[in-house]
Image (cartoon, rainbow, N blue to C red; front, side):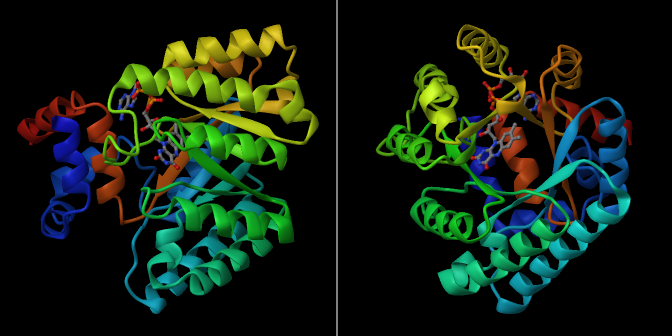
Amino acid sequence: MLRSIFLWLAGNKMVRGWMTSLGVARRAARRFVAGETIDEAINVIRELNAQGIVATLDHLGENVETIEDAQRATDDYVKVLDAIGVSGVQSHVSVKLTALGLDLGDDVCRANVARIVAKAKEVGAFVRVDMESTDYTDRTLAIYRSLRDEYGNVGVVIQAYLYRSEADITALCQEGGKVRLCKGAYKEPPLKAFPHKSDTDTSFVRLMKMLLSPTARARGARGAIATHDVKMIEATCQYAQQQMVPRDEFEFQMLHGIRRDLQQQLAADGYTVRIYVPYGTEWYPYFMRRLAERPANVWFILSNFFKK
Ligand SMILES: Cc1cc2nc3c(=O)[nH]c(=O)nc-3n(C[C@H](O)[C@H](O)[C@H](O)COP(=O)(O)OP(=O)(O)OC[C@H]3O[C@@H](n4cnc5c(N)ncnc54)[C@H](O)[C@@H]3O)c2cc1C
């Protein structure tokens, strides 16, 4: 129930305008967001790198409505990649296609992402295409595949809560795709996604095993297991051990500000851990999705509010 409310709020423009003007909300969002500027984000990544943890940088924003805004977001990513190159931090970038013009047409969006991917190649970085709601799944996969075939340094995300994901992972494993596996963060109808968490968890473990299987890896597939769920992490470590998956053939990914203890523990155990570091002023929908995942976070915000 609360999950649905927060996911509805994530898309509500009126509440968005009000919330983003509130200092207390901005401060609360800082739990999950590295800052508003590139410099703040690079500093966070530097601290992670010092602990043996790598990153993927996300310039916050989604569902832009004009070609100019999509262009601006693309320019920002090019600047981010320059900053990664100049600073020497160990980081990839993650992009949302609706921030780069997907609502304005596939060609507009593909051209913008191609600029980012080409720039990333120049500085030795990798571009992960985040997965948004099912309104965009097919088009996201098509743009990913076309850029992967042209440039190589691109990966995509698959959401374990979708019924279609097993078929998508089967195809991506055959193609040697680089896939981030997550549970899924959007509001989807029971017609498309498992309504019960236990079914999503079962699907997650099944898809993880497909991605890390010897046949998939032999074709070049690589899995990035993105979760804070200890059960999912343990299942992955166990399967990787059984199958003797080399440590450089998969990685764990987590979000900035969530389960830092687990991030550090896995890195200390010798696993590659990559943290998704979002930054920028467009934090509202990202923040709402984090609240939807764990409504208990609301108490954290309220306690901040009453401290003021
Ligand atoms: C690196 C990364 C990239 C992602 N990219 C995408 C994407 O492209 N598309 C997409 O749809 N989703 C994406 N997600 C979000 C994902 O789909 C889940 O919504 C999110 O990770 C929560 O699920 P969980 O696997 O952590 O498991 P859950 O069962 O939700 O949580 C397990 C435990 O993790 C902790 N936890 C989880 N979420 C929070 C939170 N918000 N605040 C505090 N503690 C929390 C709690 O201790 C909880 O008990 C991404 C997640 C990660 C880690």
